[in-house]
Image (cartoon, rainbow, N blue to C red; front, side, top):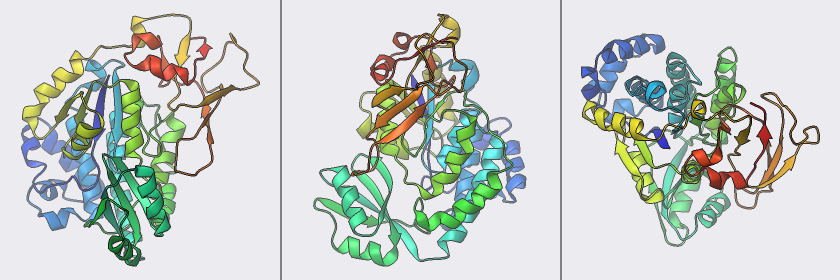
Length: 396
């Protein structure tokens, strides 16, 4: 299995569009996206300086537009079969949703532009910020101490990196008394993203997204909320809307990639950040940061060389439903073993402790969707380990 990763805000660099404009159709497509969001994306992505493109309202559509345009040259649907999992960090989750076919690319870019504008507006309401907390012996202990300081662990990135967010006064006090074994580095961001301070942005995005439509993901699409798979079209937009006030659990996304047995990962441009985290958290897998069109042949080779475990290769009269989390499965009282069921039927719940330290166990509802089905658990490297969470046979 191969992972396609989409970076988030902070990955942008001046001139990041320039090398990609040599690809056929890229300049035209980016120009069209620029008209859609009323921004000169080509100028911003080629000649604008670092200060101009760090504006949240500019950065977010820039990153998503570049990601979806470059992804279009990977031919995922033709080359990847069922062996792809996609994930994006923060705004990158919109790029990932487009890669998975859950959002149309133009919808993803437009939503990114509105998201950036609304988050920028929310930042102006209260002086807030973010700081990277690096190091520490135990991530849960560091996160707990961040909360004690009246801050939010807004990004848990793994590899000894947690981002604290909140008021500037609270961040300054925290920096003076950091958790043991850590160092605190202020980040040049406009406000406390992925916290309750973004509540006005979430409300505005919910209204904006109400008339939009999503589709069932064609590939496994991981959620920033908890690293689990987005089950179907009904959850795509609600999760993306809620995401602006919820912490990014990139550590759990990487844990899921380990559990799935991913053997390679490709980061879309502007690339480098997520591959850097993966080097520490996913040792031994093949990694590629796509920096320019010269990386396309390698990316295509990595995608096409993965075993293609599509449903068409194996046609039993049952499916194995694999939960995106570990826990204790309780079958729904309305489902009997061997019964014929339809897509969307509730099979049961999984009690899991995954989440914030000290939180109560939660129940994850499990329903059969084509993204949770595998023709044979043993037919997909690494999947058999997931089956201890739940094994349920259902009619195809």
